[in-house]
Amino acid sequence: MANHKSALKRIRSNDTKRLRNKYQHKTMRNAIRDFRELKDKKEATKVLPSIFTMLDKLAKRNIIHKNKAANIKSGLQVKLNSL
Image (cartoon, rainbow, N blue to C red):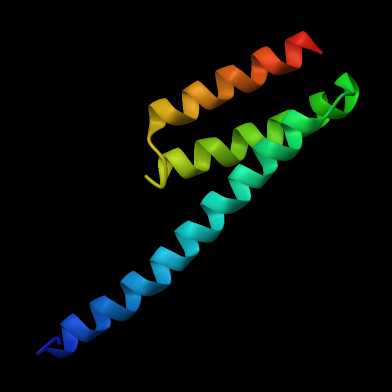
């Protein structure tokens, strides 16, 4: 158990940040899964920019690695082009 007030606060803030990061990461995974299930190219073209924005924000905040974001974006673009 923590012995200082600042350590207790750090534990609380770490828990809050962990939950927020987990929520954002899961939201991104769900959006990607939904995109991969799309069959209509027009619909996919509308959705893709918002997913790219989401990936860039997560990479900027170090929730995911920047190279992982780039790899996912590349794969999604290939998927869109194949529709």
